[in-house]
Length: 246
Image 1 (spheres, rainbow, N blue to C red):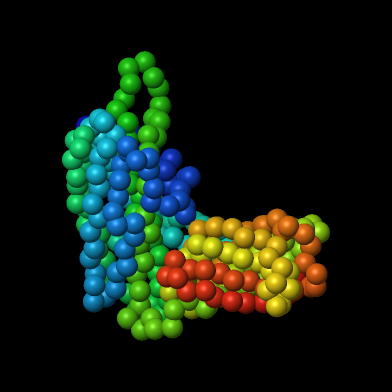
Image 2 (cartoon, rainbow, N blue to C red):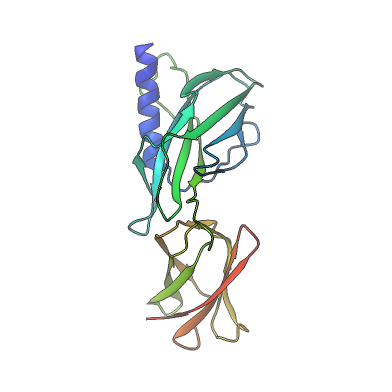
């Protein structure tokens, strides 16, 4: 049992090292999780997920919750004990389904929404003659804890920096009290929005009170020192902005 626990810890360490904003996806014949996220609050402190095993084999599964932060513009996962996930480790037979429950350990008085990631790691059985631990599959599911006073939603402020004549680095700050999940992004080279220079599906989260940045390649250089931006959220809302290109 102690050997199995060491395998689990090594696998989880590897998962945490590579997972930050990975979506909750797996192959159709692998582990399948639903729903794809959860929102908690002081008045709604628990939620549940359903994990189905379509791998064709029994699997050992380890759960771990990490605090999700974007303090430096990139995703980072930190240790936390603020969210409980149960059962923490379990065997899942082929074709079986396991209910995973998550809950707040304590109330939060934060004005901004807090973000976490539920890491669901499948740890492979030890293969004779093969040293080390290889990761078969891992899922990363977002969990958000909203403030009871969160009423305004996301509020995005954009800026842009020229990298090359046809490449810019976008930065988006979210001063709102909940996260924004950008599923489609359009960048125009003119304020009138007649010349689309970039269209993409970044699937980027911008957490409450934090910021993200990434580089994009434009179809051609913008005509002026500003670009217009349409950010489509997973809620269906479109947030518009104008960013000066420095």
